[in-house]
Amino acid sequence: MDGTQNCMEKIPLPSTNRFVRRTVTQLHVEQLPSADRLRGHHFIAGFAGQRIVKLPEDVIRAAARQPLTKSLLASSAGYYPKAAGHLARRPVGTDETIFIYCTGGSGWCDMLGKHYKIKAGELLVLPANTVHSYGAEEKYPWSIRWFHAVGSQIPDFLETLGVTSEQPVVALGEDAMLDSLFEEVLTELETGYTALNLIYAAQTAAHLLAAMIRRRHNHWTDAPDARQRVARSIELMRNHLDRPLKMVHLAGICGFSPPHFTSLFRAQTGFAPKDYFTRLKMHHASQLLNGTNLSVKEIASRLGYDDPLHFSRVFKQLNALSPTDHRRENSHEPRKRESAAFEITALPLGGPEEA
Image 1: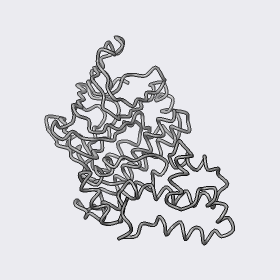
Image 2: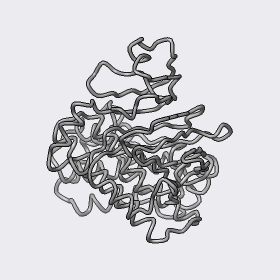
Image 3: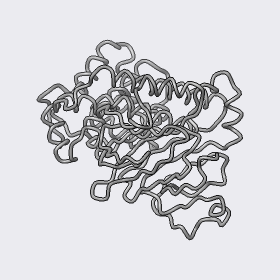
């Protein structure tokens, strides 16, 4: 779109697919096709573990004519972990509104002659058609979740959120729900850009914006105690049983270093974060074995295990029975089975520590 011209931003190489998706470990500017240089894009090396999706312009134009996406559309989304050297300059702005949620570290933004600092738990909003530049602080580079949006409802959302080009930074605090909704928008766009994908991503973006508005106006506590922060990380675990979660990411959401986070988590639950997350998965596996006809392979896949044999070994280690034996033994005693599984994985305070 026009707003991408004259832009220098540290993002991945363009894909030959009609939507862009990359997980980048290292890229170099000399790899770029000359056509991309001619369009005014200046790319430098990407970030390890980053993800980005950008819808094609023809898809965005078509969505602008559809009833369920014309008022709000997430046109691109991404995640940049520890984005050292991240820099974006848009001398003519962009026709999209940009939402950037800092989940760790810190960054900065220059807009309309003012300089802003952004730290973990703060939202940076860059209204459409506003000249701006932003990037990561050098010493503690930020980790950010972001999406670009277009649509007729954007001005109303910004007004209710209390954001203007003169006040672009909103203190929301570190919140697992916001993080989860950013992830959901990104994941849906990564899946594709059918009408259903776009509608779902748009409505999830609306939910995300509404959650931001509620959080801002409900006067969240700036420094929640350790128990609240650990509870947020557990909520995030429960909402992402189908994928791996890095403990570094969870620690960043809670605002702690990984060792301090692990120590606090173990003090409150009796388990290290990784062990707790595994037990949550196995508890849900017990429920699926008892309450559905899904195969062991299907259950393993739903819980993020590509190898059903590895899943079975982990399940047996925690439940003393293989998934197949567990289902057979408890098929006629569902209440007894569920109670036993809960006792294994409920993780009461003061429970056993990770071996």
